[in-house]
Length: 277
Picture 1 (tube, rainbow, N blue to C red):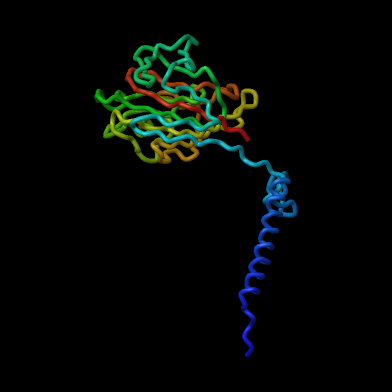
Picture 2 (picture 1 turned 180 degrees about the vertical axis):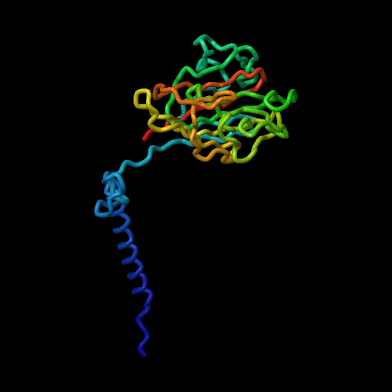
């Protein structure tokens, strides 16, 4: 059998040919990208009748700086598209229940619940959103059950995710930290020790109304210290104590509320990302 010609000259020529071909393909891909031609329009239509699979015309996601995660020593940096409600410097984004400046305290970069000051609510209002809140219950443990490190995070100032010192502190199940208060206990108790910083990340879908009629209820997914504790649960109505909740029609947007329950719970690094279709 005659051995194929593998002379260095011919081998180099093949390599050059392959490189040129690869370069042509790459140039075509770059050109297509520059012209917005990546993707297809001859693929199946996705449900809803607007976009094809891999549609070249479909808008690309916005670029967002994801920020930096918090540590026990310091709060992180919010995502670049977040609305910052508290960055440790002032209370300008908050009012009391009557719309007046809040009497909550500002201590060491933290917003501290002050007994008798009442609920605090955000000046800005939101609909569907991602809400990030960091909190720490008091280092010095006092009381038990609902009397220990109690506060709350309210969406629309109506729908509460419970804040409580639930570290080795038994209470009723739907009153635990990260419960949808009075409705859904958390899947697990992911609480840190008293005094340590903890995080809630809440994905909230607002209820929809048509006039006075409820069209669709609110839903919430909650991460407590990075652990899923509420998995897209249906909220049955505004938070109430020892009663069944019942929806009352309201607007498409509402404020974030933080509860004064008489315990000096600290808050920091509070921000919101609005979620839009």
